[in-house]
Amino acid sequence: MTTIKASCPTCGEVELTPADVSLMVCSHAPMSYYSFCCPTCTDEIRKPADDHVVSLLVSGGVPAQVWDLPAEVLEVKTGPVLTYDDLLDFALDLGSTDLLSAAAASPVRA
Ligand SMILES: [Zn+2]
Image (cartoon, rainbow, N blue to C red; front, side, top):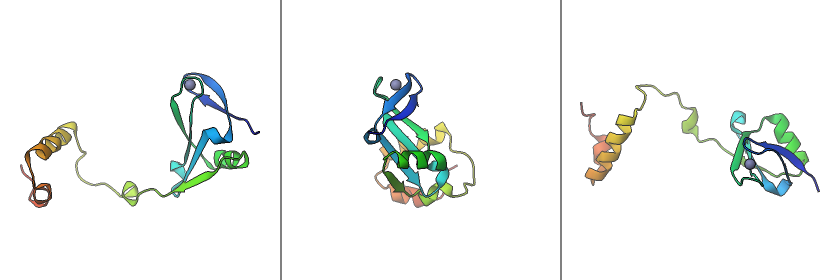
């Protein structure tokens, strides 16, 4: 059986089998990653997977699962950055309105 050596930030080098590793290949290559549950500390470790890593894992018997990046992620964002205060105001508004869609469609309050 193929042994895959990977590293856990806490435990260092660990040995895995292909069944221990999930390989998620994204349509937007920089977002591809692999993950595994560390056999020592049981933390889930997630690391980026470039083309070389994808090739190594696939050749080692890890099936690639293809996923698409939601289009919203690559949209150009304009306007002010959302702050914690904005988020808190939104959360408070959620608790005080039954008509969220109407509130979202209304003009921005000062
Ligand atoms: Zn670990």
